[in-house]
Image (cartoon, rainbow, N blue to C red; front, side, top):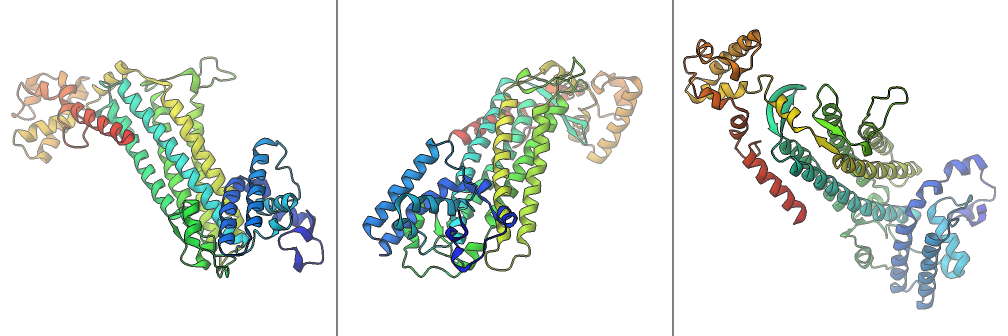
Length: 462
């Protein structure tokens, strides 16, 4: 495409420096906006027709031309091979003009690339958010299926990566389910602010054509039109919000990946990784490496980086549009791609791991994880909790010295530390009772966990 055919070429007499032109070019990545831009252009053409800026014949020519371009984009493998196109928007206009002639040159009336770009990006991101929520739901279903596969299983719960108290396996699964549920809420919230139409703001001051913006918004599925033209063309808040919500998704996936990686080590041995999600070592034949999980954990860094780059790009920009904002595309595109693939991989991982129930239960029954239960037992007998806590600390110390678990200590030895200890203490210290007492809402008792699982299923199926 020569300089004279560029959307802005009339003001210039000289040719652009080739290195600058290549640096300025965004077609290599913003071609991802082709379909959203075509969709918005169809509706804009109808807005121009209704405003009297296009005849019926011209509007029909444009619609047919855009339909043809979309068909060609889907059927011709070399359709996007254009070394001269500055961006996807000029690419579409040039192809349309070549196809239908002068009518194609009239399509840009009443809009600027500034509001055109913002509209296409919002349409694209809206679709990505919808697809991403679907991927989050699939990961949630995989967690629920994993919980159902081991409904009676127990494993140690940790604080500071030290054994703390036993929890139901399903309770652990539901913890990540809840994180992803909040992620879905954030995505829907971001979608609300993304789903605002900037088209009609033109370059910065608004359009002088009597285009019915509300009708355009309705046709494109937007909930509202932008209220300020300066803001509309320079706003990328929705990109930052999306990247931030995506970052939290990656935080949760990374934490889940870390848990599974740790639990799959020989030292823990709670989880067995399936061959479908593991790799081997080029040197050590015995290795089974959790590469998929490590990649999810590692790729979180790219999304965090994109969030920071968007914030940094925006922080010093004067109103309204500035070319800096071209840098939003790759950050947003890569964020969406990374989160989509990470969610898909995590769902696959969850369907290809097996809990070693006996090993996990054995670990949950040892390591003085019923110490808090013993303190609660004494408190229920009337001893102030702080005194009960101190007494149990001394009992634990004695048990460690004997190489015994709390429930293995003879009754008379426990009574040396508190006369309130009676024979019923052994029932209170059992793994089953330790779990059963956590029966308040949100707790890990089997009954509560069963209710939570049913509620989680209903939240996805409703």
